[in-house]
Length: 142
Image 1 (cartoon, rainbow, N blue to C red):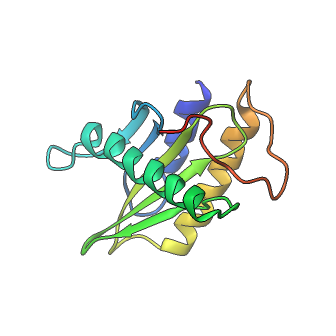
Image 2 (cartoon, rainbow, N blue to C red):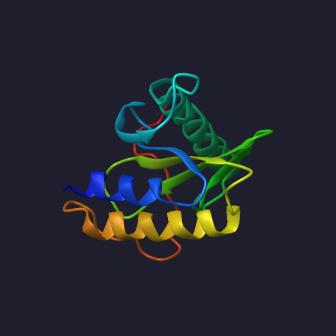
C-alpha cells in the first residue's frame, strides 16, 4: 500500500468522515479519494477547493503575511469541510476532509488530520521537512 492510500484510509476512519481526498492545488488534480456519494461528487468538490487554497495563498502574499496556513475550515449546515495543506513535501498538496457535523468532533478531527499529514510528509520520498517558521508560498505566481 502506498503513502497516499495509507493516508486516505487513515483519514477515512476519522469519526464522522464522509469523504476525503488528497489534491494537488496547483493543477487541481485529485491524487486519491475515499467516500463521497452521488449527491456529493468528490471529483468536483476536491479540485474546486484548489481555488480556495490558491486564492488564500495569493491574498496572504499580497498582505505580506509570512505565515503558514494550518487549515481552512468551511462550515455548512450539516457538514464541516476541512482543508489541510501538506507541508514537508516538494509537492503542492492538501487533504480535503468532509465530516458529518452531527457525528464529528471537529477538534479531534483537526488533531487526527494533522497527525496524518505529518506522517504523510515524513514518509514522502522526495520531501524534506521545512524549517520551523518558514512560510509556505507556491513557487509559481499566477
